[in-house]
Image (tube, rainbow, N blue to C red):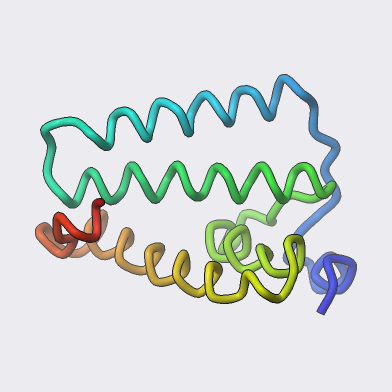
Amino acid sequence: MSLQQWEKNGWIRPHQTSAQEIAGLLSIVDRDLLDAQGRISADWQFGIAYNAALKLCTILMFASGYRPERNAAHQRTLSVLPLILGSNRKADADYLEACRVKRNTVEYDMAGAATDRDAA
């Protein structure tokens, strides 16, 4: 499936980015990676690191001329990775999807679901 098909399906929409917008997102990545090293729970470390990864995928999508629709935005932002970088990145997208699910668990369902290894 192509980015154009995703657009036809209503999963993403065209987006024109700017250097300023990308710089702003990269500043969030830098902050999150630094904050994730702090003396906080593994759940929060994991969630912050997930946010940094999500922002990097957002940058890829924006630089490709698209943005996700609001419904299932995180999932679509991660799933589009192989369409942009190639099918050899499917395993990376699958890993990030598993991280998204775990992040939702520690954010909305229960504390302690992320281990120190997950956070690292």
